[in-house]
Image 1 (spheres, rainbow, N blue to C red):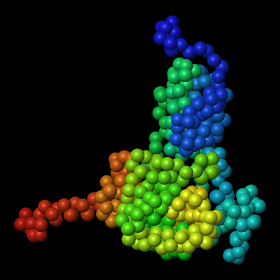
Image 2 (tube, rainbow, N blue to C red):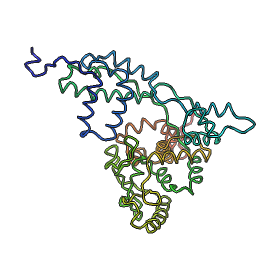
Image 3 (cartoon, rainbow, N blue to C red):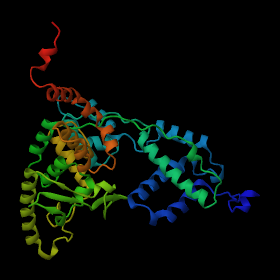
Length: 393
């Protein structure tokens, strides 16, 4: 009666979790970032609705959410591990140094010929895939929890349910596994191997700035000042539902900024712009508008996924350890720290919103310099010959 007097009474309802989520995604689409909205919708469709979608919304409780998270952590992955299956077939059918071709691998493992070709190139380059865990990563489950919590906050506000069980549930701990990065020799080897690729300047810019993939694909020439050797990172080219879209603004507040580029990168961009201007003149009015820095011959900007796939092929051809395109960002940050650049400067350059999180992420790199820091500080304090004056007889 008190809740009714205060306008907080919740009427009994048979509305299911799936029905509520369908209504909720329509209602919040205009108020959410498009990438987040699409990711959360995919989470709901793939991981939430199949497990608890038929449950009545008002009966959803904490134990059900905990069981959902536990199941997703152990067996939640939907995509089958095709890569490891292809490698196992390719390895077991090698005869006298004549392994099966992409068509054989494709037919045996039920994959596309394109996936099989890329896989065979990796295996021939000595890149051995690791078996993928059947469960989801803790970070993914944490993202799913964030989506459920936000949705249930609105469910309570809309008086669809009396409480939010996600508020009383702790999501899985975030894993702190180190990202695989390339060292200086690896980076130089990749840059030499990709020097004749059309997007060589793109990879060079990525490895000397560490900006995000969407930012480098969405970079426009009016945001590049080669005379001052600066770029302004603002526009993003993101993937939503498999399609590339332009999006104004970076991922975080610090992502929108002007950063300096080195002389080598600036010279590479100048040479690339000359080639692009020749292509623009050749295509004339058929040249794609947009003024993107990195384009195909007719001015069309690349799909971010195509850049990732191109990077994978070039890295495999160079015989380098396989890392993701996003790991180039970590490779740059690690190299900059080892070169002695201030952690605060590196954090600002790559657009981290929280310097404290940056220090946690790269603590292993900074720890490696601890011994050198001790010696440098002592040398400054004591100078030469001080140690002998206090040494015991």
